[in-house]
Length: 273
Image (cartoon, rainbow, N blue to C red; front, side):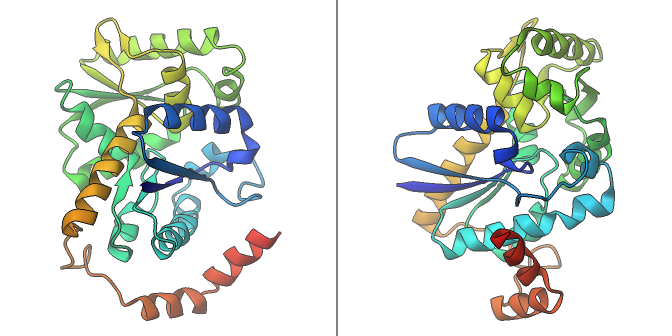
């Protein structure tokens, strides 16, 4: 059996339509013998508007990565085979990869790499405009910026995407319109931004717009997680452990530093709330 820890940037129980659709879709594309445990952010993480507002601020977005770090450490401690960062800005990815040895799969990076096998210019269609600077910077850091072309937004807010699970037609039309915008700008493959939109499109069976493929990002990331888990079990394959972006700090040093800053106790208290 392969155990995958799926980590969302949403509080999953706050968005039950998405939570249930996510479980249906991921279970349908998982191979036999894969067990996916779905985790979201702690209840109360977003006291104001939902995650889209927080994503628009560098500090707030960075602050939330501590939940991803804690989740990855817990996943390794509990014997999971891979950790899936299921949000397109790849929250905490570079740091987490230095902290755990189990495979860490980042949705944004994985999606663009997979999309490049289907077309030579990747267009991203999301519904949170504030994500674009993060996505552009990430792709530069990964060395993938030459693959990514236009990034545009569906004419829909987070609440509209959630409502579309009950009334799909408006969001389908809005996505197709946005997809045609990036196609007109030269995109030959489309990556849907963020999990809720991805899962919605997959459930609607939308895999192409005007003969341009639309990638199932989460399904693809899951497949990569399964394959990387196999490699890790067979050969111990893991990232480089040299240099600032590769060196792995001793666990005792890491735990002491996080404890001194109150990170562990703060997150534990939220868990008990």
